[in-house]
Image 1: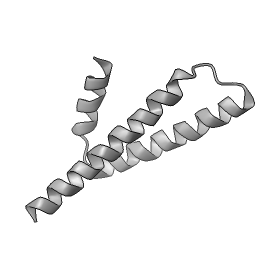
Image 2: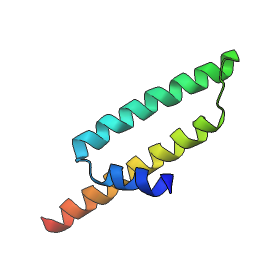
Image 3: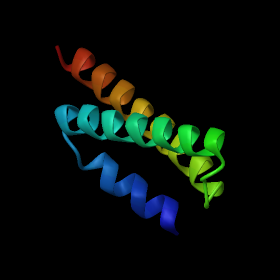
Image 4: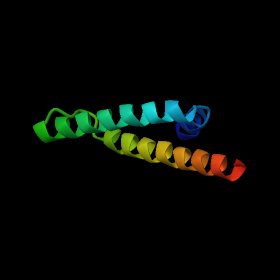
Length: 72
């Protein structure tokens, strides 16, 4: 349920907004990895969620790029 809601939210974003979301997710991933290395990470499952959200954003970026190329 949560995944489909997240996917539909991301699908509604423009390519620029997707790029911003990707940047935010990459920063969060870095911070989580840093916390894990220093032993301060509390929610280890969040690493997996962020990694999958990054993949979702990249997939949607690619789909939008291909869709715009097909229209041209």
